[in-house]
Length: 260
Image (tube, rainbow, N blue to C red):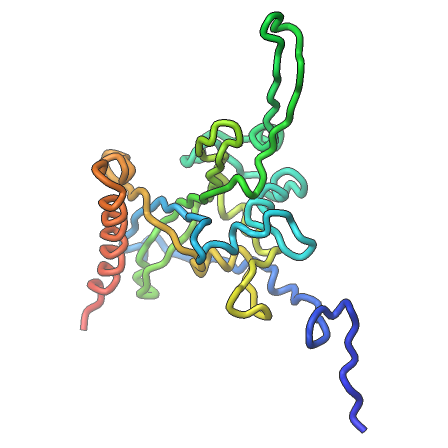
């Protein structure tokens, strides 16, 4: 007589829950790239809109769960709690480093209400915290390059930045920039939700490596150091068409480099 499969509440599914393979949390090294094989490269800045369905796995859950967190909570916990992410900067050139205490002051803003008749009297002190629901966009800075030895176009992300909406003024701004290679080990320890197959999920490092998200190019490295919106001012449609043109040029370049 074959015994039926015995399940426990901790299994949480139709099969016994297995312990996560440690190899799933390891950061795979980038392939070695010789300078002589770097045939061509360009630099892009992209914007990930979290309101798009393709990007919801980066936005939710708004409240961290025991087994799953939003991308913002993963980054913030890595900076402030675990201190596993140390390369944090105020600009996308990575020239102004930020300490954990400075990052905390950006995330938790103190609003002081004073007496209009006597400013020395403090009536109320309120702490306004930036949480996952306030992050509307993510911006990434990455390099595209053609590896002559492997004969392929590759992408490496250099930096990632949450674009938040100020709860008081509703203005949007970059909260900080994280040097992406320094954050990869932290990102690899958390899984992102996969709505297509719940039993096969990617960690956040794999999500970015495989570009499992939808984005729009907002800037390509240029002699004027301008964003697309600075020279395509007539309409947002023209900005989207310009972003699509840059993306198509990148795709066509890889195809035209081949000879038959």
